[in-house]
Image (cartoon, rainbow, N blue to C red; front, side):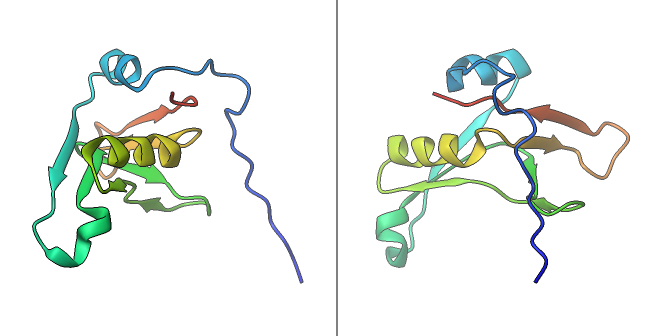
Length: 106
């Protein structure tokens, strides 16, 4: 069996940053919205930066990353956890593509 490890590239190099400061620095807008379908009662709220994707753990791919929670605050906390140490990608398939390495968000 072959095991391939994909370490987080920015671990230890970027200073931790508050989510609000990170968003302001990069001109990002976070959308937090409520799901109305009752099957999502524990994940009623959804949070993500508008128009963002993340580089996937396996090379060459992108994935939708978002936070879920029973309240808006919990959805944002979940998103911070999932986003920390990753690379955000905007306009992935255009010449305006932008990548942002995310520090640990607090």
